[in-house]
Length: 115
Length: 115
Image 1: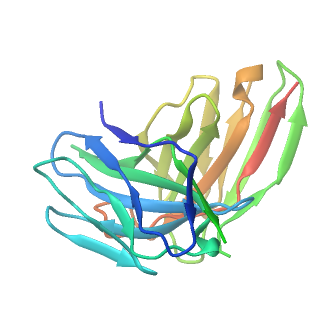
Image 2: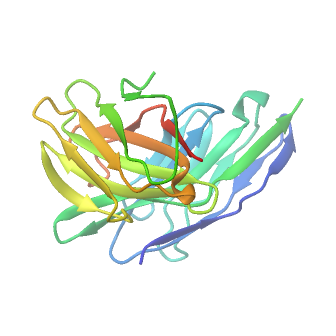
């Protein structure tokens, strides 16, 4: 079945450091790929998405590129802030004969940014 | 605030009991999804409804059922509860199902504790 693998952390960085959170996937066909963020006590929010190979999703300084050849969708940010501290989930949306199914999530990466 | 509401926020019940979780989607959204977040299994897709009809099923147990009503709100029924059903249950909504084109907006979740 479909699956998403990401580093679980926690990942601890200093403010203004460069961030990479790795994400790889297994899916049949051509899934759409997403990064969601969950702040403490809240639901998930969509951070960015890419729907086809070589697409780059970007939002709030975060970027990720859909790499079909390496089945990856790594999340990057050039300079993190304390307010970026949260749990980040990589996810895919696969398609069956009847259309799109629900999201398949990775385990989540807990990111801690220290001042 | 995503516009998706879930009630109750917290629920504590005993093993063997039955509970109902309620979700109201964002205004205009026809599709509702249910997800379970637990420490063991992570975030898992349970079931999806579109305009009152079941659209896709994920890892939903036979003891669980759901429905979407004509006013588009949805209920998730969990019966014969076990300790392992303790989790955060999220509802999400979107304009229409999938294809990566329609963002899923997540509610704040219902935390279920089975004692």
